[in-house]
Length: 298
Image: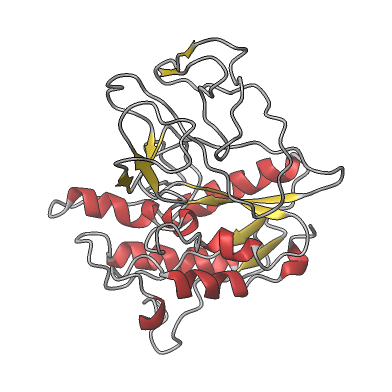
């Protein structure tokens, strides 16, 4: 539950000095368990790339909350009601993003966007917190029109609903072994992943969207025991060969898996986030730079 005094924001103030009635003037607003809450519109002009600060006042213990383990930015927690404070008092840095706060922004007629979805490679795991250096963010900075929306979910899989609705990612190949280690666990076959990717692409195309696929990145030698398996690597090679061929249903494919040609199954040392599975800021930039902007047509 988020509560405020009248004329102070319940959902949050957008920067100091911009307080709004955001829930039809009600003094309290309650988010149902497993649900979501959308505020009233806030009339305030913004520009592309501008940062917004959203504050919440929580009058009591909320219990477990929805959160992202890989936040787009660092948050802060402070005691008491400081909704209108320009500088938070006794603030503590929070390295996770709680309550899944987001902002929908009206854009000029004809503005187009691209949505990047997938697993932790998309969300930005191992990039510097608070610097907005994920692959989608760095790709967005290359654009002269439109932008990229990051919908990555760390731990997400294509064929399994568990961490978010299934989208796609390396975790289909590595997570069964990682979770079962040292017990054996079978991952999906290449044929199963190809079928899943085909279904996903066809649904998006049927909705009239341009669909750009990406190869599965390298992860040989990752520190996570049980993740790197012979069967998973074989399936990755087969799926990537299909993606780089001419029978896939995508409009185009970006080869994010291009690595050191002497060891194509490992992340290059200068791009390794430290665990052999995720890329750092430089690696995310290299992926962003590899995208042909003409494919986005924004």
